[in-house]
Amino acid sequence: MVKGQNNKILTLVGKDVLTEARTRDVLTTVFIFALLTVLVFSFAMEPKAETTVMVAPGMLWVAFTFAGVLGFARSFIQEKEHACLDGLMLCPVEREALYWGKLIGNLIFMLVVEAIILPVFFILLNLPFSFLPGVALIVLLTTLGFVSVGTLFSAMAVNTRARDIMLPILFLPVVVPILIAAVQSTGGILKGSDWNEMLSWVEMILAFDVIFMVVSSFLFRFVVEG
Image 1 (tube, rainbow, N blue to C red):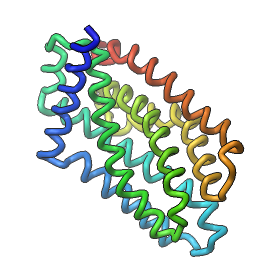
Image 2 (image 1 turned 90 degrees about the horizontal axis):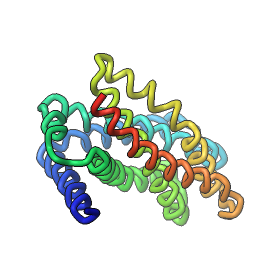
Image 3 (image 1 turned 60 degrees about the horizontal axis):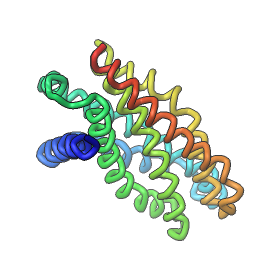
Image 4 (image 1 turned 60 degrees about the vertical axis):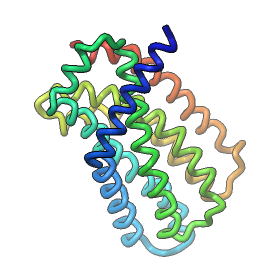
């Protein structure tokens, strides 16, 4: 049973990856938006080391947050516009498998964009690359929580008339805790703080990930069938 469900999830992920490889719609949109956001902030701030360390974490997470909102919206709008969502609902696939398939697909797209943006971010702000692995770990953990919530709310918002407005309204208030924890953790890494000093923030990110992956997986059935 578990193996069969895993195969269904992988099939759904493969479908999303193949579709994106052909159109490059989500990746292109998210990448350009994130890159422009980082560029604008980098040119707008004063090139001082103290200012950079203070402002850089907020810059990074503003870019990733709003780029993620764009990506989540596009992923389900494509399904809706081409009637693919109705087709998926008619398939003998558990709704939880559909959720995990979309979550993994969105996670892949976000991580690809973040893997490109992070080095550019460090170069533009002249940050030491020795901090990159630590920041990358925080980005990975936070993105997992982001995607778990974003996948649920994008499925909810796509069925509304004002879907472009509804997704940010639903999504952003919920992810405020993990955003605060991500900014604080990233700032601590860039300041050279010890990991023990940031442990409470990292634990908050992990708790958010676990709670919302479980809750979102359970609620997804009611969202898509409602």
